[in-house]
Image 1 (cartoon, rainbow, N blue to C red):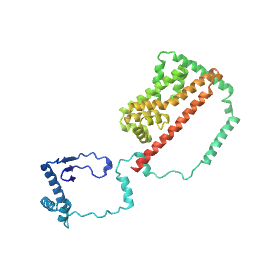
Image 2: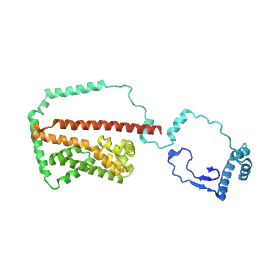
Image 3: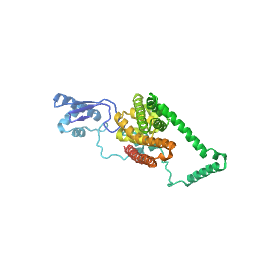
Image 4: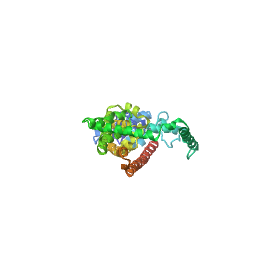
Length: 368
């Protein structure tokens, strides 16, 4: 590409929007910078290129360019019948089928996996809307069947008032064991480190939090739970940084594209949302965050904010459950209801926000 005999670009990278924007070839650009010697070399390259297209010599191109004063004038004067350059008056219209195929087979930009699957997958949405009465009927029959089995078979003897009280006394004995465990000097370290393997084997973290609250009390149990979960998050983050992208993709599955794009663009807010309303297992989200090199402080602060409502609700539940076993009169039902309401509202708000962000991302990829 030659520009005003001042710039000469030589290389194999496409000038137009092709190769999905992923050209890696190295181009070389020369600039005359006002030096007549370099400008003459650039003009000579231009003359040879035009001469090759017209089937003439570079000297003829130079002569006609000097005579007419423009490159277009020289081309018009030297055009022939066999080998020539012609004016493109009107672009031919491509058939719609060709345009559709080109949009998929030769895209201008890289296409995300989700957008590609959506493009090739038929619309599977049901034309029907509203509740499925068949589903409701099946559920009602199942519930009625279970109630009948409980009423007219020996299954009803499995849960009685005496058995419930026996289970409560057994749980109280377990709580005494937990308090005894908390007196050991190494007990806090065990609780702090327990969350890390738990998140990899999908062990329910709230159970560890409940144990921590029963063993150490509400305040210390809550503190140990938050610290332990953050340690587990930090471990998954750095493991994600060490693993290669293909390994993380296999672990994350189909949610990787959505999670990674939202994390990249929204940072702290996205980390908070993903922790509050997970779209993937706890460990997988940490691995993805580490693999895409999201800022560590964004990840850790977002994790802390995201797990706060759930951990707080578990703490309140555990503390009030212990109080109920000691003395049912000590239960603060308003506190339990408030914690549950806070958790539900937070989850609904963040779920709505996350759905909007995923929708925007999908629309942007579809229009790209």
